[in-house]
Image (cartoon, rainbow, N blue to C red; front, side, top):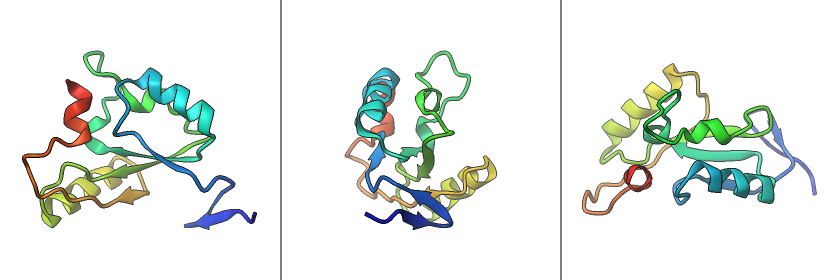
Length: 115
């Protein structure tokens, strides 16, 4: 199978993994090792670099092997999604996946992560 090329980046794996369903960083770390993905998506609201109170989702991802694509999960409308995407870009993330969840009654993965 030919490599997949997106934005100039070459991927051998076509499997992309979302981090929203993992209850802990340790579970994600084991899944990353097992599946061989080269791209993960994670909500900006799940990024807690250097925050001892929260499990740091990025701390378990070997960024030399896996591209991180931030997503705008938790945005309730387009304006919020764009604002979150701009924050991600300002933080140095060039890969952004736009997500909008207008129904506030349904918990987003980022809310489950903190429980």
